[in-house]
Image (cartoon, rainbow, N blue to C red):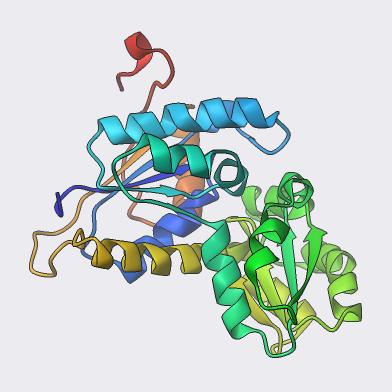
Amino acid sequence: MTESPIGIFDSGFGGLTVAREVLDQLPHESVLYLGDTARAPYGPQPIAVVRANALQCLDRLVDHGVKALVIACNSASAAVLADARERYDVPVVEVIRPAVRRAVSVTHSGRVAVISTRATHQSRAYLDAFTAAPAHVRVLSQPCPRFVDFVEEGITSGPEVIETAREYLAPLQEADIDTVILGCTHYPLLTSVLTYVLGERVALVSSAAATAADLFRVLTDTGLLRPSGSEAPTHQFLTTGDPHGFTPLARRFLGPEVEHVARAYVGRPEERSA
């Protein structure tokens, strides 16, 4: 079981920043990534639709024999986490709670902000996750919807991005926030811009990095961590959309490890073969 891959699921490309962190923090592990690009974005869709689509994709990964599941999508994490942990016999890790725990441990003032897509902001998933935080922690949620468009267009610097960031982040500066959760897996690609606008004294908490660290803990605690002396890991990438369109953007998010992308079919049993 330790030799089995880690299954990472996202509605599209953003989860590849989580995959990047997993490859960096757990270099001996193999990864099987599935992006549901044919039905993305999940954010604007009804939660029942998000739940159904996400479970179909997670089923697909479990059918492949993964030893753990990572839900690398904020919308899907909010919609299916409880169901997934009851449905599958493998550990399930998501992106919201690890980032919240990290932010609570990092903040000095107790003034924390979450920047995210509009859908994640409206879901209140991060605010709900903070209910168990110490009483002195105060949370501001700020939607930054254009950031995803910039990243997927390959625009991660320049005057337009900086001006947009200044507009979005002004309420955080007015509130004297000292810690910001990057509550969308696209946002780590904008780290330089965010630091430039907010200043270096503001700590940025990547949900991707926090999730990879949580995955390491879970695999270690369950005895599923792949031994360091194992053969070189192998990585596979699947998409429900067009593999040719997926590949160049996937390489932008993750890097040269994306050598080949295959088409995956999810849904009814007779469709579920790649």
